[in-house]
Length: 317
Ligand SMILES: NC(=O)c1ccc[n+]([C@@H]2O[C@H](COP(=O)([O-])OP(=O)(O)OC[C@H]3O[C@@H](n4cnc5c(N)ncnc54)[C@H](O)[C@@H]3O)[C@@H](O)[C@H]2O)c1
Image (cartoon, rainbow, N blue to C red; front, side):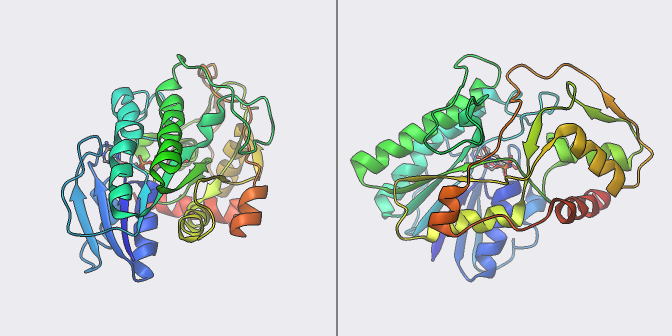
């Protein structure tokens, strides 16, 4: 099949491109390299079934001779760490536009090509949830004006545009609400939790936990996420659906720090550095009933296996 992946030089996008090329599909990867890297696509850059197009999705999509069968729209900054230069806090306008104007532009390509369109939404649409775990029917508890709103509300509006194109323009859409995902390929500079903890542990620096570390996270390994996204996009009976993808294996942030310390055999001490950033969710976990029922999908990689692979990756950086 002919497949377009926006944000294909990013963490999730590059793993997805690699897997799709391995399965014999013809991939066009679109990215403006704002938060991604050429290094992520180094392995497949010369593959005859892979084309890289440097393009900003907020600009109209260039005329293409290819008619796409499936489009994965992943282009958007994603890191929430306010210390990172490539977080959505540091790139607020880019984040708002990629998920809104960018989503609209790519949906127009899907409409024209009669392609399946998958929007990479986020668990952030649930905000600081009052329902636990979160089902797709939960409308969320999100501040429209808080510091995370540039991302949360952009994803919510991206969903709104996607639902509109499904309802009124009959585009065959899917909305994947992605929960925290980790694995090799995450940039050190985006300072997402495990990247920071492992880097600090390997460098024998203090492992820095925000707040009291009692806030929880459930992390999904990248290979499982790619499998879920592919099952969703390739399934025939999921047009217009919203499905959570993520892990239900919930741990406190402090427990992650302790696991990293143990698995890296590091002498680093764990310190509690700052107050929890404003609007940082205390708990978040997907209800995966729908993913299991409709896609037959559930993450398989154990946390220990995933963290060990991450450690090996960060050692090589
Ligand atoms: N990683 C996670 O835990 C997670 C969780 C929820 C949702 N998501 C979503 O999944 C998608 C991919 O996330 P990721 O972790 O791979 O992030 P990432 O930053 O590694 O990848 C995003 C890619 O999009 C590109 N990009 C950004 N703005 C663009 C634009 N205007 N035009 C073209 N390319 C642009 C970046 O250069 C980058 O290569 C994002 O939409 C993100 O919001 C990720």
